[in-house]
Image: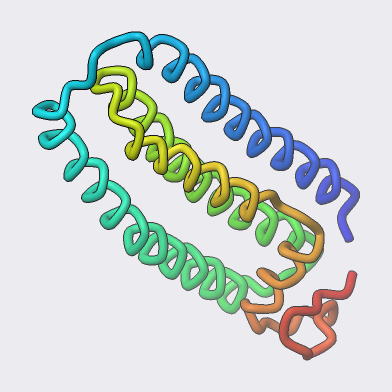
Length: 168
């Protein structure tokens, strides 16, 4: 495996962990400030459906982006068979998808915290909680990278042919 892949994986882990910290810290600040204010149920009735809509739209949007990115990478690998840069191309797409999915989760969580800050309605804090769970699940690992590469089903002489296993 290319020596830069583990380094890139570590960088990605730091990025996702920083996103988690941001969601958590902002939620704590929102609770500390927002819980002092009287509840604003009218504003909550306006903003909570928007939050739900954001969550409902982001989920399929991520999978559309993911499918397009994987198809593009697969075409790239078929048209220009990997010589020695297949690791870099796979890692770049994996990193892009990790950041996009994590940013979507982070945005959802931060929006929920902002709504709490404005409305002091406790149920909306489910959004940052959901975002944190998604971010924990999105922390990139060598196994997830291997599974992603296995999905590509390309034969560069480095893939052992079994789904989910990518052997350097």
